[in-house]
Amino acid sequence: MADTVLQVAGLTRYFDVSKPWLNRVLEREERQFLTAVDDASFEIERGETFALVGESGSGKSTIAKMIVGLLAPSRGTIAFDGEPMHIQQGAAMRNLRRRFQMIFQDPFASLNPRWRVGEIIAEPIRTFGIASGAEVEREVARLLEVVGLSATDAGKFPHEFSGGQRQRIAIARALSSKPEFIVCDEPTSALDVSVQAQILNLMRDLQDEFGLTYLLISHDLSVVRHMANRIGVLYLGRLVEIADSKRLFTDPQHPYTRMLLDAVPDLALSGRRRTPVTGEIPNPINPPSGCAFHPRCPHVMERCKREIPLSRPTATGTAACHLLEDAPVA
Ligand code: SF4
Image 1 (cartoon, protein in one colour):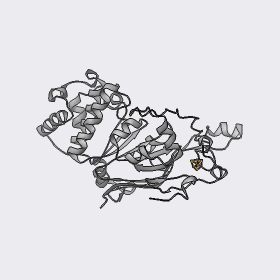
Image 2: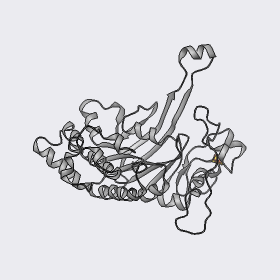
Image 3: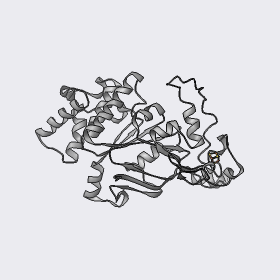
């Protein structure tokens, strides 16, 4: 039976991007809102890697920040292990926060440059009361070894390490609160290609060893293919398709997913021609009517300009496209 660990329903976040009041009065302008995430719903099962993909500005990182509590949703709910997150307070919230961690894109920016590595990793251990006294040092040494570094690295500063090693330190810090769920926001995109695979393989090994669940945010489809069990495709803040990873790559249902996949280099050398992604993402302050993808869609119909397509079951998962409404679900 499915064991859902995270449940996101109708998640929406908009930002007030209006000019200051006086400018609005003088220029006779209305307030303006940017909808970064619009009515996103998905579930993540315990132990799986669920990836969110999409072009820059699609809302992936905004969803990640709402899940870890760095941003409040404008609407919608997030539940962890069946507990709604926004109503937790005090000790319950603290315990919930311990079970969540995040790995950021740039390990140098996420590690305090004035702290030694040992202090960086020890901070969550002390904050969450996981160990005390000499046990903290032992736990730091253990975590450094778990991520492929040496216990003696605890005395060094972050600038003494390479980018890949810094990401290992960030992973050790994320693991130090003994989390069950880790949000990984573009964890390898700031790294050299030569070390990206090492970090991804480390993340997979740690997932097996500690039974972790990952939400992976990435614009890189080869990373997502390597890591994810299921994938959600975002376009202009809306989830347009969710499918099992293998099936998404072999049988994409939504025209936008197809466009993204057609742009990926043909690693299997099957002779397929690569088609670059065409058109620009529209301005999210003033998105297109109906299906937001319609100005770029090769299958656009009149109806697409008027009606927002609803997400519905497909042969491979769910997708939101008027073309799929009459398609049989296998
Ligand atoms: Fe294209 Fe219409 Fe489907 Fe949108 S709803 S993806 S415009 S066919």
